[in-house]
Length: 127
Image (cartoon, rainbow, N blue to C red; front, side):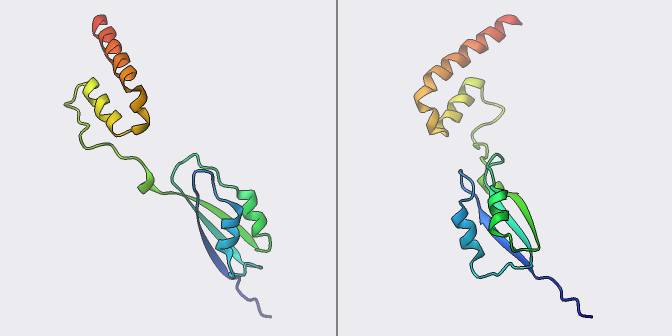
């Protein structure tokens, strides 16, 4: 009695900020033919909280014998600390350097620095 081995298929997907569009899933399948296969879907995400539509993936692969969806966090997409930020900087200088690297904070930078100075004075006054 013959017992043929099941085919193993790996599909690589990359999730953007909005997850993985179903058309990307279909495009990744291409002509791989997953009917009766054991399928591993590797979803690369840049952020931990990016949602993956596992139901959509499983629906697209319903002919497969088994489907495993694997989430892979792309550490290259993670933010790294600016080299200029050292322990020697005072808190206000460190905040100013941080704001320089975050353009989305430019419009509130003055308020942030003022608040930081007030907090520092408050804390120093408690000692």
